[in-house]
Image (tube, rainbow, N blue to C red; front, top):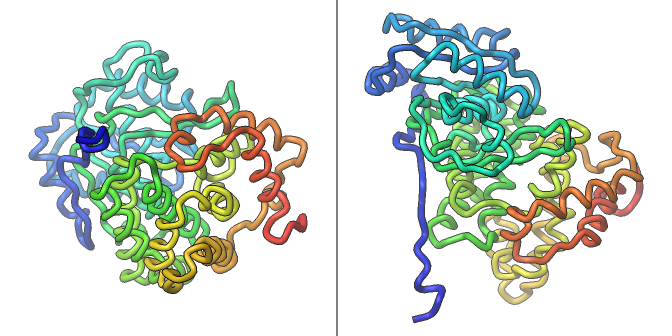
Length: 397
């Protein structure tokens, strides 16, 4: 028996995973079943302003359970914000955290639920210890379709000292309940819909080619990739289209499950330094870098590129396998144009002389680079950044 046949693969998902229009209405039932005595709603300033946080509070009011809100999140969260959230909710002694929002709010919610009661959390943040248990229950409700945070075991935060984004990972970051209701995404702005949607696509395609991919994770990746083209443009340019919003909810959730179990790779590794130093939205960074990264790494996964081209209905490349990669990369470039997303790093205000520093930081993210079927060293990463700085065709915008 070969070594590969001896490998046992874990497959993890939330205990309850519910997707569909109207799923939000099941929240009260889930709170009752978890036996919550005091609830904290974790969200962001934007959703508080437009009334979404109040909507959740009003919905659970008939339960007569003491409820507090934590909405100090604006933009992408830092480790300092996480420390503040843990300190605040520790003092409140809540036994259930409900996270509602995009990936930032959900990451704060699930990480806080896992870290409450752990004392000094610095060792967990630094990766010296893994969170092995949690006593605070967690329910997550996404209002965007992209990060898949509601079904993953990782949470991403900005390290202000190192000027880089880092993930902390634990199986207990999976919520007890994930409720994905497409109606909650209707109010999501076009730019956020585009960036988060392409983030989900990145999860799907990176998990499909990942070294840790399995036949089961590839089922989830494949379905997400197939659903993506028919829904992303409609969701961005006609945000009230509930059918496309539903489709993107499935893309996000399916790709999130694939990400949680197979992991992602080089695109994310190169995106993290952009978020850490320049505070570029994670989805925008992934979307822009994806074609430039795949032009390089796609050379080692021709069969998978043929599969992806087929899933995207770009053609049958069985007789011309080497052309599949070009078709997929061209699709990625066109996606940026169709969704009105930036097409070069120079557009985002990144200085060319900072590229070596970004490459140095990205080269250290071995957790993701080692899951990529192409050995990227610092020099090759710098080359990718340089290409992305100039944009397709090599001209600086």
